[in-house]
Image 1: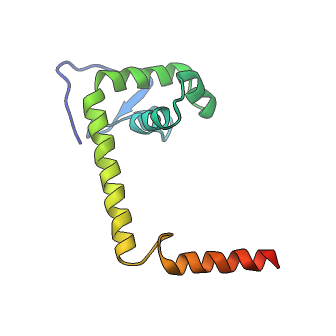
Image 2: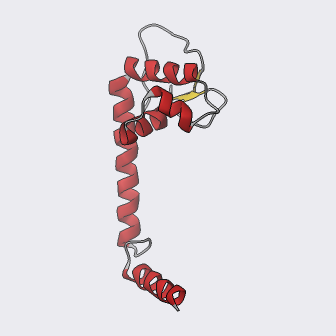
Image 3: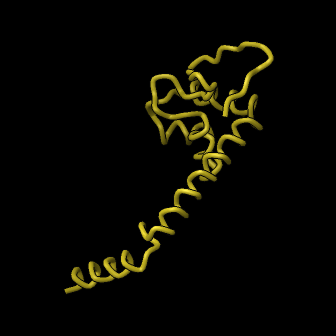
Amino acid sequence: MAFTSDAPVTWQYLDLDAQNQASIAQSRLSVAQLIQEKHAHGWSPEELHFQHPEISLAAIYSALSYYYTYQPQIDAQIAQQQEEIQNLQADLITIGVGHHTADFKQRLQQKRKSYEL
């Protein structure tokens, strides 16, 4: 999902791609991914830094600032990505692939039994 800002702003420690999706410079972590970790685990900026020591605390705060500036757009992007993941998972279940299938569960039980022997 692309969005534009009213005034061009440069975000120190962040890179923006052609679709205006931000990631932390010199890392593979997007702002959206960082926010998902923050929400999923309830992590503070300091804990995010502890979990990602390769990313400076200043870069984490920059990412958080970017998120709170564009929160509705980034939340919509995250929701869209989650919907796509759910659709792909449903497709896999429909065609009988993945950990939800009876075959997978049966193979897992057999594997467990072989370890018990």
